[in-house]
Length: 488
Image (cartoon, rainbow, N blue to C red):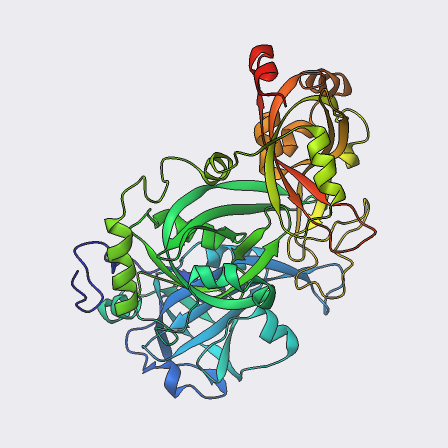
């Protein structure tokens, strides 16, 4: 594969097509006027503190969805914010924050996206702040300054000139080309890396659909899950909460797109018992980077046959295919009593003896913090953990406790959760909450006292006073003949 100025005939170093030639201008003072072509141009390298009236042109390498905050100067009012990262050379990129009323900010956001070239004029340049909040939530930039766009005076518009130089830098890495973790390292060193921001480079295995999530406070959010892989790991989840990044992912293709992710958060997810990566407000993604390492990964990804990367089955099916040990309830209880220190999995052929989904909704639908995974009390408006990075982001999901019985004994405490519960119930949380009490009871009796082949995983407890956590990985209804034949 050729690496000639970021171009590739094979798709690794794809370059965006020509931009629209019409000029889009946003702002009270610039609704009907574009930035003048005779305005002197400035680069990020040459910026200084103060109002900058010269024209700055650059590539948008990161953009984040609009947010609103209470206006301290006008009680009861909201002010809106749009943030993006602008790059005009291989070395220099800078954070840009736009403030204004809702109509202005949302209108501005609609005029460009990640990968577009924009020009700016009449903006404020300030020395970059390094507060704890900035370090935790803002992208790391190479410039010593930051830019603020003002609704009244500033102009931001798509660039109508020759943007070939910016198409070239779109594929250049923003950190050292070798400054990243292999996916196997994230898995192997989960205890040391849990909760940290790291750099990753990986190929796309699958781009999931964007789902609408409603938080406990009624806030609507977008959630998109992707699967990554490299030479060391067959599948690794990447979660996107930001609508701008989710839209950016529309163009990514399985085994064709290579991602270099800077400052993506990796954390251990208890429900899956594995590490996952999550894009945050610090994350910057370079697609198809122009590096030897990316070229090597692309060559590997494109040469792999579908059956080698299990592209014809999903991760849940791969996991269930590898579970072969069959237990009865008595075997399970004896092994639980031994308090084994390792995670173990198995299969049970049993009858569902308890499945209380028609009682208190809070017993089967739970709200958790998206950042630290802590369960929220019923009427809490935010995460109560002092160490939480983002206490106002929530997810609502199934956590259903069920009991199983066979000819040897009965066992309670099997947890049916999240996507596994949705698959078993054949509905999501929103649809479940819309059911009437009678409909929930009818749904319960589709499972209660019925025979199932249950795949489970046991996670040992870290405290002597606690019980092991038993999660259901899958459930398949079976007939009486197969049930008797497989019962131990």
